[in-house]
Length: 158
Image (cartoon, rainbow, N blue to C red):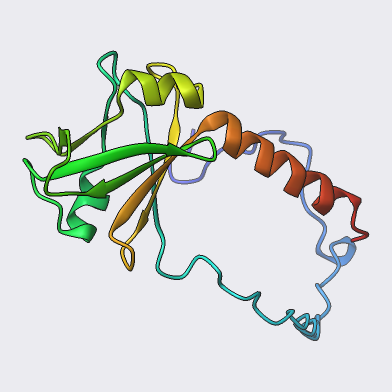
């Protein structure tokens, strides 16, 4: 037995070179032209920063990134009010609420109740740096707005 050559798997089979075709050269395909993109839509959200949070059982929601962007520090007095189904938070020297030590925003029970916000339910936080405010949108509002937008998108022809 010869150990230098591997033993054929099937001793009675061999490739016959005359029957194995030589591959033909294949030209590279022409690249497809890039589609023309539509002009960018007007950016109405310029200057607005977003985050998503979940209020805890005490009604606090963490928003460190937004607080940093607004330069709101722990202990800053805040005024909290409900407007159009959203919670509006504004710094106020005589505010009844404060930014928490860990970067939490207070969402008072009455405001949560009026907006239909439950503990652990996601909320959309929108920081408006030019107005130095944060608007807290309940998930039911965001869902309604997106459902309307999705209905319009799906109704448009592609």
